[in-house]
Image 1 (cartoon, rainbow, N blue to C red):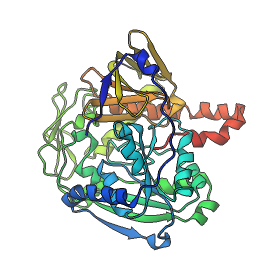
Image 2 (cartoon, rainbow, N blue to C red):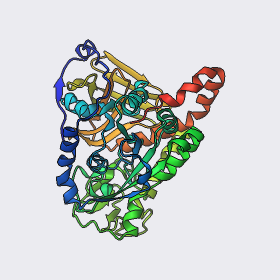
Image 3 (cartoon, helix red, strand yellow):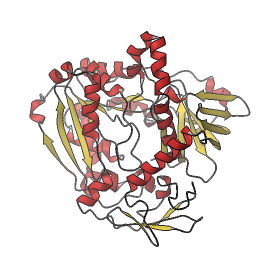
Image 4 (tube, helix red, strand yellow):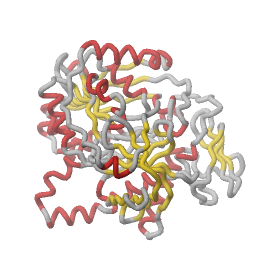
Length: 443
């Protein structure tokens, strides 16, 4: 999948008219059928099946909130199948509307920016449910999982559930990540995919629960480890490219501690500095070719990298400064390529400068609980995205170093470290506490 890109001067992009906000539509039966039909080839190829648990509690025409884990693009096709013929609106990232906004609106999609404060999102979801009678599909993780475990979830989920006041349904996929993990450059594996559709909360339960209690319930439902599931079910991935680009996720060598130099190719992950090589087995385990295997489980390796980033932050050693190509998204007509610059990330947050000195954007750590980063984004390259509802800046590192995963980990840990400061701010300005949870970004 690709995206329309247009070269334009930074100052000309700033002069473009702001995109108009539009209310969600109710997809017609025709478009619901088209979406399901378009999903058939992939679902047949994966021998897709699904089970329902407690769904008899949901009325046939009763709108609900569907919370779904996010592993790969097939998630959208799964939603179109398991919910058919129910009309639904999917909350999706604005870049998905580029060049096809009219179509996305007709199939009921609600655009929003990943990990950016968006006050209109919950209002649009309420409108879709109450005025259009749509079910709303939300991927609260927003970004795809990197290591196959649950990505960061916002505290605002509980607030959103309370605001909508409708039944909550959970869709958990199995095999979708193993078929098409984000790091693998869109190379698909032969894996069976299935899903479980479960009635999670009734309106009566929602009404009696506090937002934090709902958050706990949702986090428990989302707890998952794809690699552990693969091993427990003895699923073999035999493709010879299964470790291609695994260095995007496992960027730090646990033997010599070199960063950004790992090479994932074929079925192995290799460190050119210390020459240590690991094999990704057919059952998803890492095994050292020679010597000790520091981490046989990929999520454990990834969690260790998080700990290393946290330690660097606490000891004042973390910093990022990298030359980048810069694109901007200000409407849904196209992605605008505006020039080059430098992206800096420290304990103070992000700073992006460039476009011959015309661009200077800063973003504090407390701006979001996570960061929009992606691998091979629209086949353009690995990307780090920051910005606001007015303009998103897509930064493509020019150096051949793996930065996306580490930067996301750093942003998440910085947000946690900023929690005491946010608490003190709420004590000084009590009125901000009532709205903070509603403005944390969800997509």
